[in-house]
Image (cartoon, rainbow, N blue to C red; front, side, top):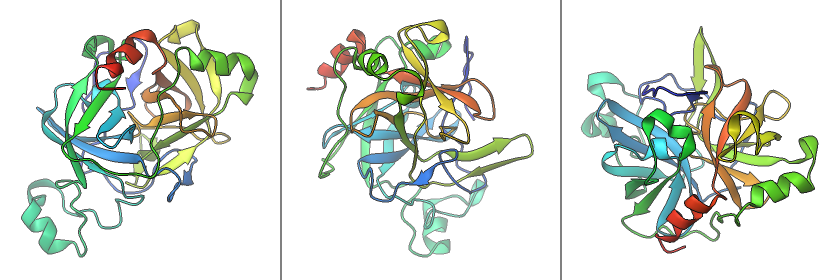
Length: 278
């Protein structure tokens, strides 16, 4: 797993391809066709192949985290299947090749080599690995349009703050969607490449460790939450399709307690996204 030196957190980062399969978002619910515009992306870095989650915000633009787009080599591969796990390639190590996967896995869906869509990755111009949480935003521009009946929507300036003020305490609920780990502890890791969702609530915003760049959400058995591999996935405001932020970091290695979401409703982020035509 790729790791960065960070001031406050361990990244909720993409998980290496050879990990043991199991489930996704912690204490979550199968998404099915609930968010068909949320996808699983695989990308190549100098030290390996990794995965993140993300959201189509148009037929050619896929929003994700900066740490999922910085330093990417070649094309990003993206799947919008609700269940990528069932027909993924089951091989690992030196056997993990397109030819071997096609021969060994019936009905192989191309994972992790050939996505339903491909694209080029761009990280926020101020993104820095050593302070990733300050500008943890990225975009993948697809090579060909991927049509969906609906898409994720960018927030208005300061919309998270307005939502928080109008919904005190735990009533400020978000919908987190992704393909990451279900559970992790020193003894085992469980994960699946299946789209799931949870409904964590706001713990902290506009103060404390998150400043004005992130939101701290609950990650517990009552609300569910995010974990490794959910990075870049959307945290929709309430039950809407408005992306309040993208999954960014965790405060511990087991993804428990709280999770950090990088806000998309700040001036520098909306100004940068406007350069892509929004």
